[in-house]
Length: 124
Image 1 (tube, one colour):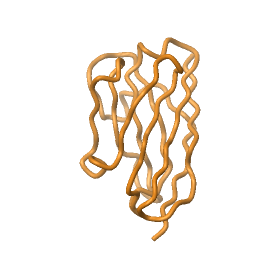
Image 2 (cartoon, rainbow, N blue to C red; image 1 turned 180 degrees about the vertical axis):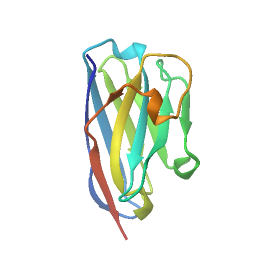
Image 3 (cartoon, helix red, strand yellow; image 1 turned 45 degrees about the vertical axis):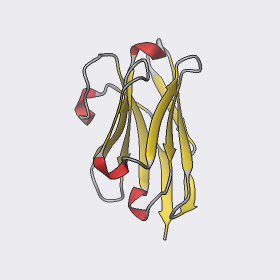
């Protein structure tokens, strides 16, 4: 059974940076495509970033391109999200998610495994 534990969230000011981490356990991490989703207050959870099993390929929602970087360390079973130039609209709960197939998907319903989330709050 896959377990995902996020950390690294917090309260920051606009323009600051944060790095989120997600520790994976229970299965072979390198077999899983990984993603970050986020949920702003009062809104649906949305896709943010995606990374292939090897880490070679990544994909981002347009609103975070050039500011966020998704990466992974398969030796440490850990997924990361480096968030730079944060904006108030980036505020929300950030979740990591995993799926053990190779096809790309940004759909929440295609991910079987979820962490509990970490809160990111960006003030003006």
